[in-house]
Length: 282
Image 1 (tube, helix red, strand yellow):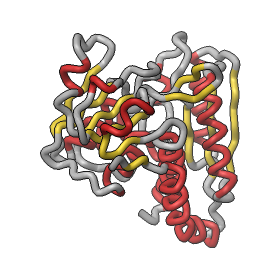
Image 2: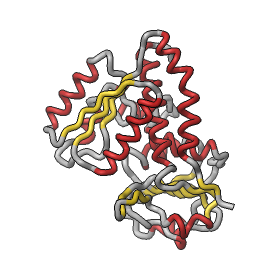
Image 3: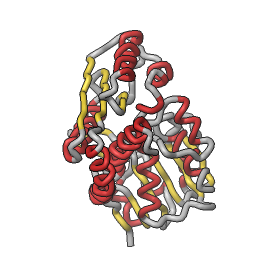
């Protein structure tokens, strides 16, 4: 029988577990504050930002939302520099993806590593290679929590990730191999995705292509994690043909209500971690 993972329930469990740490910080007169920087009008970005702000409000945490229709590279780096220097800001989140006129690497690396709540600077990504995951990218961290909280064994398992971005696929592959999973990364240039997914114990997809993964792509009993997001006829959908594949899975995440809430939970967690690192209590 298939387990449909409830991301909202698990998100609330994680957020509730953070309350004692937040109370400790508040008792020390430190109220964690996140700066969220968005550039452009990506519908998925706006949807995710709303979820993040709702969670911050729910946890009585502060935030500052900086929204730019467009901005030059030197200007956004100057904005980030000022946020780095502002002691009231404990975390900085650059909402991805960035417009093509901006150098993603340069912009992300301008964030101070101790304020890098999405763990996308070279410094923090590099630490993952050495199994230092105290700060890990929010979506990969959320996906791992889905698997581990559901008692899905990872050691020795065949895992296929359909995404090779620095935001999800690459760091997630490192974190999975840290746990001795055998990982294959597929992407837009992969000749035959089905050839890989058919032999997988766990499939993780994050492309934004609706119905990319269909019944014929998977074997009976697969664990299917859908981190894709797109809009079809004003409805939020993932990468998976959910209704036609769910009964073939041992566990599957829905969209909405699967990976998205987990990403939000891990963002709040990372904001707390950044704050604790900055004041020297971890």
